[in-house]
Image (cartoon, rainbow, N blue to C red; front, top):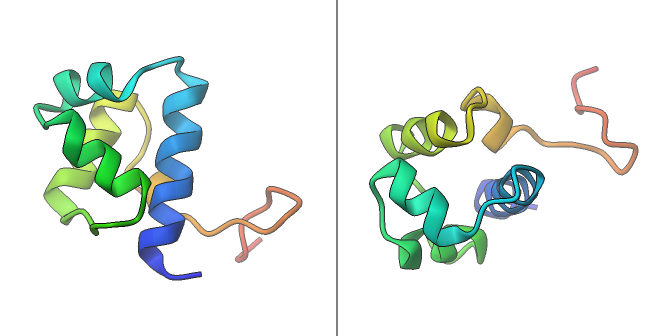
Length: 78
């Protein structure tokens, strides 16, 4: 799985956990809902500055957006 796919899965998971729509997240992050959707589909890879804005909007650390997890929901480095 490449980084775009990891980011897509994590973004969708975190956004759903916060019960936010793509539109709500986009508004808080100052981005377009279309761009959020493209990230969630792994069509695009977000720049570091954009990851920071999304992380701030979700109230999580930016690392949460790119952390690779194993099936047991543990990080690969733990």
